[in-house]
Length: 216
Image (tube, rainbow, N blue to C red; front, side, top):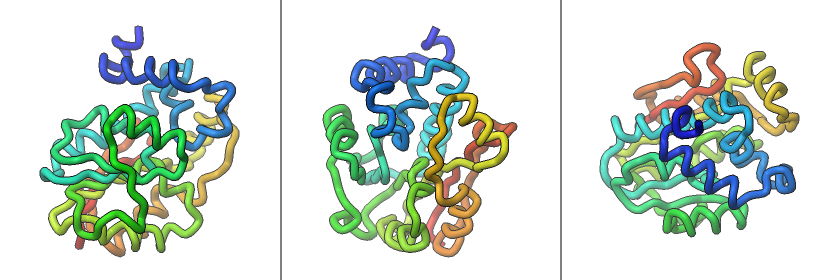
């Protein structure tokens, strides 16, 4: 059934995540990682979660050049399993358990904002990660210079609309830890970069936006 709904690659990743994590026991620890959504028993909720990664993978395929990739707030780096990588894959992830899993599954090199090299990356992903931070303008100002001049920054985040809040409630998620909507974050990005492409997930009602940006 999972293969019919999600495709073989995502069905396989769901199985790996379900085997590796005890979501019920670890829920509070990993709620912000999207893992509970990826393995959710409600397949519609899980489908929406994976569509964000699929949209990001499509933007990467269509717009990103070859070169190093940085996944900011990567968790287990699920988007890395859906792209045809055109360069080495590096991650920034604070959680030790998630970072170790990502490094193990993808041979990912772990970086920090201090050790990531400026002007290096052909593609940077920040998928449903920036909204968890309190000072997003400062964070974006540090991330933007990491992008190569011809690089592509792929961003996603929740709309926080009434439909989004209802969907979270129906899926059983009660945490309130988002400091900004994706529209707020995109307005900050527009100070540093120009919008190249945008996708809505799902198309209606739009719960998430996935966008691609280049340096201005």
